[in-house]
Amino acid sequence: MQGHCRRPPVSCGDHYQPRRGRVHQTRHRPRYLHARFAIEERDIRDISSVFITGVLDLMRYVEDNWELLVRDIEQGTIDASIQMPADVRADLEARIEPNPERAAELRAIFERGFDEPITPAMWPNLLVVRSVAGGGFAPYTQRLRRFIGDDVHILYTGYSASEGAFSVPFQLDDPSSVLLPRSVYFEFVPVDDPDYDHTLGVEDLQEGHDYEVIITSRSGFYRYKMRDAIRCVGHKGTMPTMEFLFRLDQTVNMHGEKTTELVLRKVADKVAARAGLDLVDFSVYPNVDHHPARYEYLFEFYHADHAAIDLAELSRITDEELRAGNYDVDYMTEDGTFAPATARVLQDETNQLWRDMRVMHGKAPNQIKPVHIVDTEQKRRFFFALIDGEIEG
Image 1 (cartoon, one colour):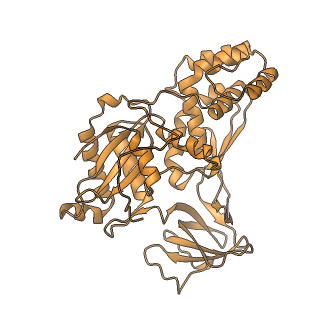
Image 2: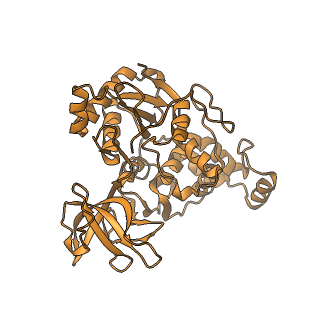
């Protein structure tokens, strides 16, 4: 990704005009309905979500809106602030009944606060969460532990895509999975030295090495580059076990520095940890219009006091961690090729709003991934319109 998108005045078009300042907690209909009926049911034993971010978003929604949810469970209602077609509301309300006993139980649980994992009390029989939870989603899985604790298992769903299912998990709480040799014909090239004229087979993969995946399938894909990077982490019998690492086309490469999504994510996690902030998500804009070019991080934090965030210090540690994460960025900053990286803070629920807008435009919810690199003008306009705090210059 080269990052050559120009920067006209920020606008989000005719469909959405952002308000300045903090985004109010919006009660999105799908999250409300999922949360309301999920917490009313005491005997939930497993949770399944395509991406682990869906479960984390649900739990954060419960934390922020539990009083509304409990009141509606108690009264058998759907709050008037939840927007939906009148016929859908009428149909739902005809099917639900007041449940004061469960409401009282939930109220007592939530009033104790969320400092300790909440699901053991809310769903005492919960055993497992099934989801895409490794690779780029691993930080979200770690944040989910604040709600579910350490006793709920994670069943990682293996490596799959629209083109097919390529591996299967074999053990709970293990992000690695076993390649399926008969699902497609696999070829691999080393990520650090790709040679497409001399590919490797599954029998050639070595533990600890990273590879790009190429497939040939029965459905017509011939030597198709998945643009995915995986790591061989061992073997199960004679078959390699692997972990998904990152998308190869999700790489910032303004001056040959090739900063992968994996590095960008590690930088964001380290910055949040050093600043004592709870990271919701992040995006990076490779600003080639600034002279010299620079990395611009856009952070969204959870329940943060924006006015108390020292943006200059946040930018300083962002630049420090980025340079530590990529040697090329370090020396290119030293010689003036890059300006120091900067940090900007997004309004609350910016990333959720992005997902909601993509759904409104017809995108399937289970296909919407976090925006970690701002690589189109549409993304730039959207995210920069929702900056709450930034460093200028």
